Length: 119
Image (cartoon, rainbow, N blue to C red; front, side, top):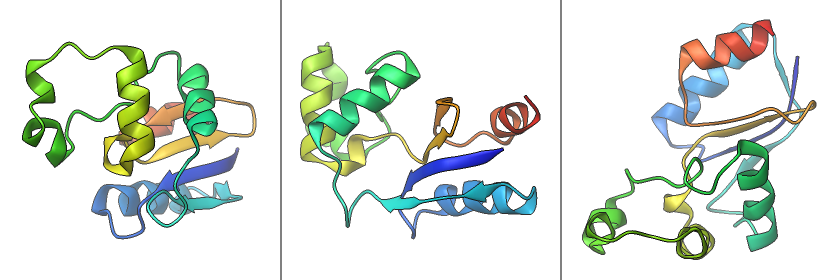
């Protein structure tokens, strides 16, 4: 299996674990994208949400700003979540792994990564 792109933060411990998990299993990563240094366009974010199946699946409710802005007390629409992800990279669940076959995972789960590698 080859990973087309890994969208991550190079100092994020979860992202580092995900990358190491892949490398330890001989998975080639064609491209890593630091989402802070290279912010994603709204079109790129929309494409990722389409691949993953929903806007909410890519939206991180763990971001510190999620509670700080009181978003946990609101019912956000898809458009609002897209706007937040576009304005602030921390609202993108990470890492985001995209395979050459178009499969996508957001967040890191060793179990989910292993299932993807073995499929």
